[in-house]
Image (cartoon, rainbow, N blue to C red; front, top):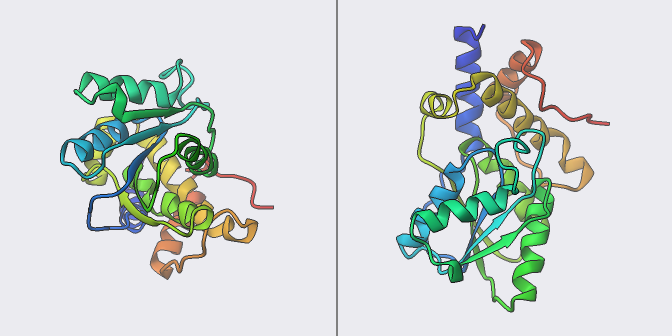
Length: 217
């Protein structure tokens, strides 16, 4: 049972994880694979608003997506974009990445192989993973400008769209943990975390929202 305190703490993490960047035209949009087809839909919206001439969808499958997206996250994203009217010529698919670091690395390699000059990236993720995705991209691709983007939704709206509050809360806690432990591993840039956010994270972890935590040692 999710309590009122759990919701308040999740709201703290939800707000912190979003970067609140002002959208601007970029060389390419990169849609990070996940269980959420909304990422593809945001990338399509950016393309239709002339924010980018090209979309890269990146992602294989994970324990969360192997049943929902058996052909791979990037391929399901591509299919959704085609349904929404994006021409196939404006889409590249990177089908191997299994984590955010690989999403960035493999997308960069694909763009280099295709001869695409990249000065800036619209980094499209789920709303609660903007900051972690940004921190990863800044570490792995520091010479380009990163603009974070996601669906403009409240936590309640997102939970309603996914129909699985436990999953969303677990993912929020996992995303926050990675911001804390990954800088020492050289996987993301360091970012200051306000004490109230750290406290919310600790309470949610203690309450059992831990299925997406990673070993920090």
